[in-house]
Length: 194
Ligand SMILES: Cc1cc2nc3c(=O)[nH]c(=O)nc-3n(C[C@H](O)[C@H](O)[C@H](O)COP(=O)(O)O)c2cc1C
Image 1: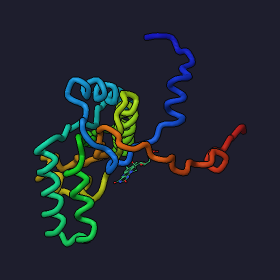
Image 2 (image 1 turned 120 degrees about the horizontal axis):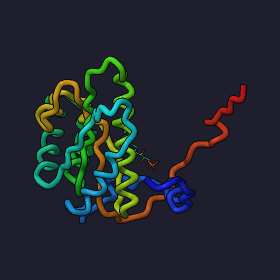
Image 3 (image 1 turned 180 degrees about the vertical axis):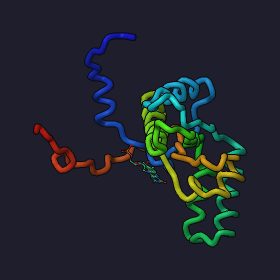
């Protein structure tokens, strides 16, 4: 391990990082050689008790088409809003590449499930940040498909305790988005000194 030293380049990256909306992303997506170091970096995430309560499923090509069709068919059978289904279907159909970050909580007397789920959320953000640091556009998405048992079983063969913490779309950017309003630190930060 290297001793700690200021990294102004990393601070500047974090201070200005902005997700790239999925609908603005296109191919090419990273190939396996480019994606592997991004995924390995993302997995280096805070994890109380080293339980590793998460896993990643890379979705590409026909798998995305299958999930798009499942979203449309299952959503219709479940009576979901027909006006929203085309957009939900497109989330998979139009993705150049997607990584499902699966929250996989394990039974533990020591580590509460909420901490394990928080670790899965940290993995989602780490994945977005690592992809962007490697020069790819990325966006963390969800929707009913992330927690619907039928979708998760039919589409991804997830176990009962598992759900999708995030569908992270990764690809090439077509436009640079304007920034979104950012929180006012003064309204969000309290300082307690006693
Ligand atoms: C758990 C979670 C789920 C999200 N799901 C969606 C989604 O389904 N659709 C969407 O447009 N944005 C979604 N977002 C928001 C975007 O991922 C992202 O926060 C937003 O585009 C701004 O990100 P930035 O601060 O990195 O620029 C979600 C965020 C989180 C934390």
